[in-house]
Length: 83
Image 1 (tube, rainbow, N blue to C red):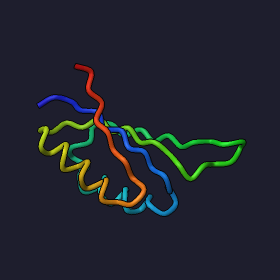
Image 2 (tube, rainbow, N blue to C red):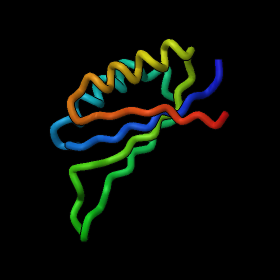
Image 3 (cartoon, helix red, strand yellow):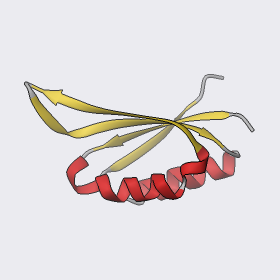
């Protein structure tokens, strides 16, 4: 079991934050690192943001985490592969 990076793009943080947090909490044992970045436009906090997750789980479990998150409207997910 290796490490996998999953990057989330969130288009409406205010509307989706609690739903995303619920999924991340339920999958917490699979998440080693979580980095949240919000867009900043002209001194105003943007409704969009990016979350980078470092996962430690099987490929199937990683896909399940991504599937749970992308069920939320406004969330897109992509795996980063360095191979």
